[in-house]
Image (tube, rainbow, N blue to C red; front, side, top):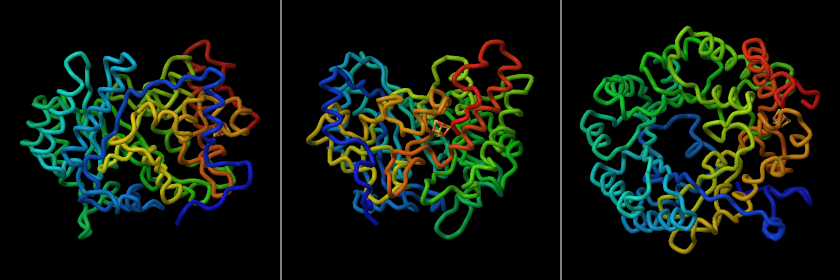
Length: 415
Ligand code: SF4
C-alpha cells in the first residue's frame, strides 16, 4: 500500500523548497552523531508487533540479507567524512537488524574493525549492538567484549509477557533463551557490556510486575517503548476519545515504583528524560522534547533511510532516495523528512505548537503522528496519554523539588 494522497497544502513533511528557504534564511543543519547500521535485514524471531516485518512497509523484502563488505567500507568512509567535516571526535554506531547477530561472527568482527580503522584513532566511537538475545552465547559475549561492543537486548518482562509476542516461526517462545543470555550478561565478567533492556509495553501486563521482572537482570537502563501506532492504526487499548489514558496510567505506576525506590535500581530513560525536561535539563535521548534528531539509518544495501519506526505509517515511508555509494550524510541532512526533525517547534503541527506542553512532549514520536490525510502534521495519537503522564510526573516533582511548577510541563488547556 503506497502513500495515499494528502489534502492540498498538507504534505507528509515539508517540501524541498521549504528546506531551501530555511537555509536561505540562515538555518544550518546540525551534524549527525549517531548512525544505525542495518547489518542484517532478516530476523530469527517473528514477533507479532515488529515494525520491520509486520507493518505497512515491505521494503525489507528488497534488501540484501546482509550488508556486503564493500557497503560496510563505504558506510565507514561516509561516517568518517561526516565526522571530519564537522570536527566531531565522538560518535555512536548501533549495529541493528533484523537481528544483527545473524551476520555471523567473522562479519561482525570485520565490520567493527573496518569502522574503527576508518574513523581513525582521533574519534571515540561508541559501538553497540541491539539484539533479540537468542544467539547471545558466552563465546559471542567474549567476541563483543574484544570488539568493545555494548549490548542492548529486547525483552518484554517475564515468560508470559515476553512469549506472548516474541516467538520463533515454529511458535516457540524465546524467553528461556533470552533469560539464559541475560543471566550471562548480568555476571561480573560481562556486565560492562550491558547497555540496556528494551521493553515494549503491553497493557495486559501489570506494570510494576513487568518492571520488577526486568530488574531481575540488573540492567543499567531500561527503555520502555510505547507500541507503535498512528491515527489510522491506533495502538492496542488506546482510548481514541482521550478520556481514558491507559498508557499514562501504566507508565505512571512504573514511575511511582522506580522513583519511589529507596535506592536507584536502574535507569528508566523515558522517565529520566521526562524529569530532565521538566527540570530544565537536557534529556539523554530524542524521545521527548524538541532536541534536533541527529541520527541516520543505513540499510543493508547502503540506502539512507529515515527512522525505522516510520515503517508503521505507510509502505516506503523511510525511503529518502539517497545512499552511501552516491550521497554524503550532509546531503541526507537536507532531505525534508530529516530536516523537519531538526526544526524544533517549527517542525510540529499547528495544534502542538499552541500546546503548552510541547517543549516537554515534543509532539510525541514522529511515527505516531501520522494520518493518511494530513501526513505527520498532527499531534501524536498518544497525545492524551502523553499529557497525562507529563502532568503526573510534574505533580510529583512539584511536591519534591521546589521550582518546576508553572513551567512548560504545567497542565494545559490545549489538550
Ligand atoms: S501533548 Fe499533544 S498537543 Fe501537546 S505537544 Fe504533545 S502531542 Fe502535541
